[in-house]
Length: 592
Image 1 (cartoon, one colour):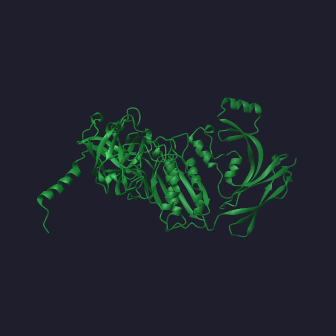
Image 2 (image 1 turned 30 degrees about the vertical axis):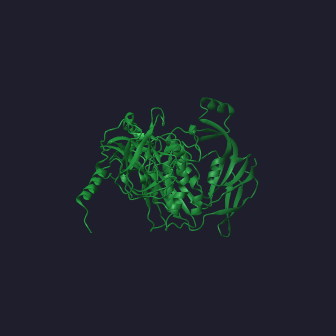
């Protein structure tokens, strides 16, 4: 077999040199005014691994003001045979376009979905360069976007044909999750505008939140980069492409990620495993690496960040006190009001449903401890009859966690969230068979016996008796004996879980209000009196004279609220560690 000629060897070497140096970080800018239809160029992106490769495009024209006043879009035909078959790929967002050695724009928009000739939209590079000059977020806190329902990336399409154009979605992937767990939380992420696929991975490990960043790798235009919303044992990251590099300053994506504006999001290294071609939506499958910097802008024309700077995150741990051989989970989540509860709940769901060691068949108790800076930890607990019960209650859990994590009074994020998952020795479900009150009328000083007949799951019937001595100040009152759950009694007595903003004045008062909620397991026996309550923040005054009530409400109607509710005169928690869903009411008249 003849060896290759020197000419062939030189040609192969020349191709390698072109790939390595054809897209310099300091390439001059090609102004939009100089672009002409028919110009040809190269778009650089990663097809596999970390090294960018070029593919050919031809300029079709410029859509003036397509993205808003003064914001145009470059329309190009994807002429390269490799890309013509798959179209613009999710994860190619930000791939730079070079024409004649000058940087013209970045790949950012998908054009239709089933076209016979593939096109793509490019953001002019001049629009991207504006982003780095915008002011950063104050105190490192990201502003809260309005929650988005459904698929935000199809906004320009008006029918099911996929016509029009839309921003190319970053390739958001979850690592560390079983597929059924990822599917369970998919609606939560879709509501936030994240199109998440479970097909992805991470090799970032579980770094301590205070650990220093490694020496950042040398990113170059066309290389792969990720926005990490969670890192560690559970990861969630959106993979895209580097558009422009200026020292440690990085521009990427070419379109908004979540339209957060000034923000603080971790920047991570990444590696493309492969591209999955599709007529509907081709996607890059990637592994997310370690944190290498932080993105501080999420704008219309792209995202901007800096290498070597670390975004603040919230540490989350899932531990198993009743299982000495079970490895705990540790991960970190971005500081964001909607994302933090959903991602934290995802890690908990993986712990109880997604591994060989799960097996919480009888039931389990989750104790959530939230550590806020400068205050004692806040703790809440919830029993579940098994993984299926948790699956059915996941939306409620995320809602409760959101209530406990965030408040309308101060921009305070927790330092640490800890989930403690403990097995229950048996299924904690129970049923109430009867509530007997020994007498319906009693005088002060007399004793009333309250008998609760109940049955544990697959167990014999049992009963619990609570004796109540009638105090003198109940004389002459028409009362009720109630047997119900803690949350139901909270609602009956005016301690609503939807804390009214106007009734509190500070973050400290908000935390105190959360601590007042009754336990969610077991039942409460209570003697209540119907009353008209005047509420001042969290303090209530029953049956305040009308004249005083009018004066208070005229001074501050938002602060002072009147409502009909029940005042608890006496209560006792019974049957803790069991789950019930019942409310039983019995009359009790107290004679003079």
